[in-house]
Length: 374
Image (tube, rainbow, N blue to C red; front, side, top):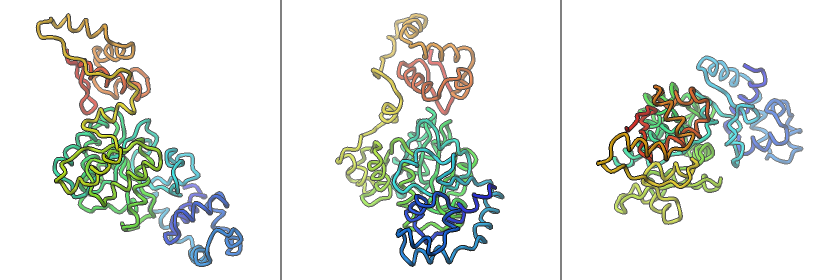
């Protein structure tokens, strides 16, 4: 481990000093090492901290806790992403009060995916909402879009389950230390995300979940997402906090209409009243992120036409990108991953073309597998 990283871990270990105050100190001292080496009088001269905050920092100058955490981090293959590091996610650099440290397990490359969508909702959600969340999560992931959620019971877990089936995968953001699986009943999902997706937390190793942690967690979900889908939410729900964070960050908020008699959907229905974009299918979200001009559903060829005639008409209507994809699929490339490797094109560009070809009923993409429809 980098010798300077131990200071970043030390700063993160100051759990009784707020993230805002840590950020404020970093604006003055630039690095955690400089904060550690600052004397009480140095900190006092900044005029940024109250006396009791300075005392908290001075009382925790021992490196013992940080060193134990560092050994645990290395043993468990945990990535440390301090705010001043090259690997810190660029999306979070732009939000208010960005985490001074992130702990991650899994595929950290997911933090810089071209397209990400947050999916949130009630823990005590309806069966229909969980089913829909799983379907949407799967569809987004099929298109190479990474789904960001909180791994909470209900909607979040269902969205993550769906996303794990596709190439986009999922990022689960915690309201506890990254080594603390919460809720405990999601241990199997926790392990699957660690293997195929990414677990992420700003909280120090071993920190238990606390009510005050979840609003902080929600700002990260919003920050990592290009847009946030609220599947189903109560009127006083953490999902609505995530939606508020997304709006403050200039992101689009989407909501699904639900029955007015479902208590777990009062909040998401209220979002629609307040101007959230109504969605009833994944394409309602995809059209905002994948550049497709003149999207329209093309009717299938009349049944009396021959297969050759239909194929000819469809070929005429294809763009150059679509023709290239069609040739590759005919040559035996039957997965989205295979197309990325074969054509060496950005996945967002391929996704746009694949989606258009699905609309034209040329092919179908299901869990990353491509099937021709003629």
